[in-house]
Each structure stands twice: as C-alpha cells, then as structure tokens.
Length: 592
Image (tube, one colour):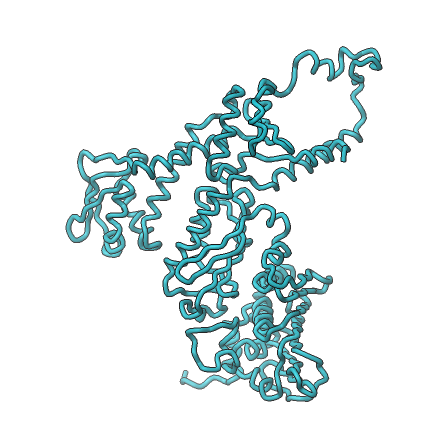
C-alpha cells in the first residue's frame, strides 16, 4: 500500500484521542480554560454522563471575533505569547483542547470580551466550521459539546456506564475546584444539581472542607514547610482516618492537579510507620515553586510533571509529613467515637422499643416491688460488675492528663479512663505495641543497627545493572548493618547482615535491595525491612489482650502513650483509643 497524506479532519480526530479520552477529559480542558480566563464562577452541566451534552459557562474575560476564530484552530493559544515553555503559569498552553473536542463532537461557543458591544458565536461540527456570527451573549463564555464521539463510534463503544462517566466528571471538577477557592463551582446532571461550592476567597481550608467534608477537617493536621524555594502546604489526615484506596489524595503543583508517582511514593513512605499496606491516607497537598524548575509538558493529559530536582521535592513531602505525624498523630481520629455513639444510640432506641423480659422487675428501693432478688440490679449489688473497677482511687493529677485516669479494665483488654470532659477507651495491646516500637526505633537511632558477622562471607553474583545501582550505596547500606564489598567485576561479598533480620538468604536480600536501589535511588528498601522487623518485635513483646493490669500499670501505660509519637494508632494503622465526650454520653440518656 502506498504512503499517502491523511485527511486533515482525520488527523484532528487521531490527535484528539490523546487529549479527549473520555467526557471527563473534555470537561477538564474546558474548566481549565475558564480558570485561565479569570472566571469567578463556573457552571458545568452534563447529560448522559457527558456523552449527550457538556456545557461550561464562565464569567471570565471572554474572546473577541479574531480570537474566537483562531481558538478552534489546532495549536492556537494565547497562553504562551513569547513561546517560552520553561515558565508556564497557566493550566492550558498547547492550544489543542477546543479543536480536539470539535473534532469528535458538535461544538458551539458563545463569548463576549469585556467592553465589546456584542458577542460572537461559532459552531464546529465533527471538525468542520459552520461560520462565525454575532451573538447577544452577555459576558464570558458558554461552550457546549454535544454528541461526544458520535463521529468516532470506536471510541464511543469503549466508554463506561453513564454512572461511571458521571463519577469521573465529578472527580475532575472537584480536583480543579480544590485549588481555586476564590471561584464558585456548580455541577449538574440529568438528575439535578450534584454540588455547588461557594467561593471562599483565600480560605483554602474551607474549600478543602467543602470537598472532603467537615469530618476530614476535624481529623487532619495542617502542613506548612519550605525548602530551597519549594513550599508545601495543605491538610493531611490522621492515620486512623484512612481509606482503602488512594482516590482521596489530592496533589497540586502550582495549582495544577497531578497524579504523579513521585508524590504517591512520598506519601506512602511518610505514612509507612502508621498504616498497613492496604490502607491509604487522605490528603490535600499543594506544592508551589518557580515554574522554571518543573516541566508540565510531559504527559498528554498534563497529569504528570517532572522536577529539575525530584529528590528535593520528595524529601520535602516525606520530611514535612513525618514531622507533622510525629507531632500530631498522638491523637486518634474521632470518627470511631462518632460511630460508637451512633451505635449506642441505635441500641438504646431498639432497647426502649423492645418489650421487657418476662422475669424482669424494678430495682430494690423503698418503692421497689417484690421479686427484686431476681432482677439485674440485684446481681449488680451482689458484686458482679462487668468491669474491674479497682482503679477508682487514682491520684487526682491523673485525671488532669490528656488521657485521664484509669478507672476500669474490661475483658482484660480495654482500659476505661476518665478525662475532664469525657472518657477514653484504650486498646492496651495496640497502645503498648506503638510504645515498644517507638522505643526500639529510638534505640536503633542512638546505638546504630546491631550486626551479625557471617562465619563464611557469602558471594552474591549480580548483573551489571544491579551492580551499578548497588555501588554508590555501599556506605549507606553499611550504616544499616549490611556490609558489602566488591568481589570482582560481577559480584559482591557479604560480610555482615543486620542482626534483627536473623538468618537471611544473602543472595535474595542483596538482589532485592539492588532492585529497590535501581527503582528508588536510595537504601530505603533495607530501612523499611528493618522497620518491619522492629514492628514485628514490638507486636510480640507488647502487653497482650487478656492480661489483667493493676491500676498503676494502667495509668503508667496512659502516661507513656501521652509521651510517645504516633500513639493515636498502632503500627498497622488501627486506633489505639477512642474518646467519648461527656456531652455525647449525656445525649444518650436524654440529659441534653
């Protein structure tokens, strides 16, 4: 078959496939254009998950007749007037969004520039212009894309269900709204309004609460750190306020929402000591830096970025999160407490509605009827409480402490403590596990990693790529207890291994670390493995559930929790305690 030049419209449709992958992609491009135009209000409406209709209305600067005619041409843009791609300060810059949408849909644009006597309208159907005309549109722009992918049936049949496509659009608009609290965002679908986020000015925390909910705001801590011209701000959730996937992680670079492996890995590394591998933190992180040190032109959908110094940015994110977690994660998320209160409230309602047992009678009192001896109150007065209340004589100063004074132990597993304004229920094993783990880590930092010398050094053969990854990290690995020496052109000699690891397969250990070094560039792999061993040791050397504790032991555990970083959750991310406020308890009994 001879080589031939493709039809221009077909070229546009092929190129559009990179920009407009699904309806959510079109919505993203149109909303980004509205933000770049300085809009303070953006209305988005969709029908059939965006397949039938996508409408975006904004009150931005609008376009004049000349700009509108050029806007639907490929590679025409007003956002990089000097042609400098090294300092992009807008969300869009390629000049591909409108022509790409027009190539796969019926596109109509009405717009009016500020101060213009009237507006203009243009229609492009499946890539063909239908003419430019005057319009009475009052301000900004109104863009409609109808019958998306009708001209490309192959793409249309691969779209998901209407519900799935709608959910993708909701996520896109939320991610853009998060970084622009000064703009009001409205989104509606066939079924009606989906959300309306009022403008919050510069109150970023308020916008985050609008999107992620007040519960997240109550269970998150603030971040504000900077290093060498790069600043990190935002909110990150407590480890006990986690999710089963990473969908609730919002990351921005200079206001641009990104989904980048660098940030995903940094967040995971920071929470490593606080969450199990199947749980993911909730976070809204904002990185601001000089546009010249970040390349945003590396992904068709602009979802990934490249930094001139990725190690600097990764270190800033990990360091800031770790420091904040050490300072703030002593408290546990209050979501568990609310769940407990709701469960108790439902149980109370069910109990009041249920008929009393046939043999039930009122407690013995001057007004009590006969049959008291068989009542639950009689059993209580006879000395058979459900909790061990031996801790009632705790010193007065204990009650003034954040976790209060121990009052009882339930089922030899849970400690009940009274605080100034409520009570705390502590899982003794989970709490002690965190305490022991932090002590082991502190000892390792102070005295170094204990080593065990091999009687016969092990020779491990490696291919060239692994050797190249391993060679620069030999000193760092030695600091972690793994002593390696080059042994010829394709092998290393293992003389010492970390004592914590016990008996190890030297070949597999060195190969795994070399692979991690090739992927991550440092020795975090071995460090994580050592941390995992310490966590396992902490689990096996902690107070077990089922052990009866004396009042001094319970209070000592509470005091240690208050002095231990991350004591709000165990090494697996489970809460170590929940706190019930007195006001909530009183509501259960109708006292408030």
